[in-house]
Amino acid sequence: MRSSLIRAVITGLHAAAQSFRSRPESADLADWYVDTGVAYYLAARGAFFMRVHPVSGNLFHHAIEMLLKGCLCHVLDEHARRRFGHRLRRL
Image (cartoon, rainbow, N blue to C red; front, side, top):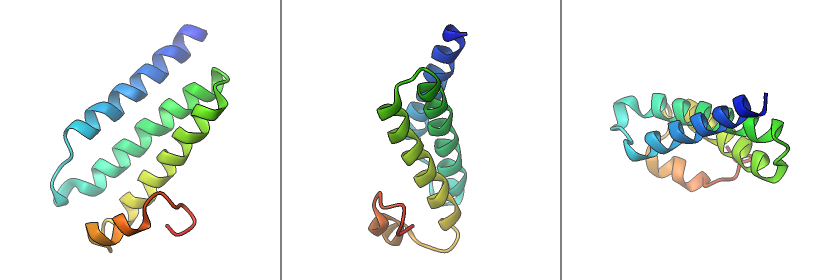
């Protein structure tokens, strides 16, 4: 069971790394945010079940942030989204 959790964390981190290397143009930006959010979520779940709670909390925070920004892509430009920073309550 532990090896499958390690594999899940590695898969999630690998997907997030690939996502950051190839950030798309504005047409596919919402999909990029959602893909990155899901990758963070998978990595966070793996870290949580491996009892690495500080790391999992940080990864869950980034997952929620990316998913919310993916929803806001349709109504806000990049400058407006950047002004939110990492503050989830403002998002």
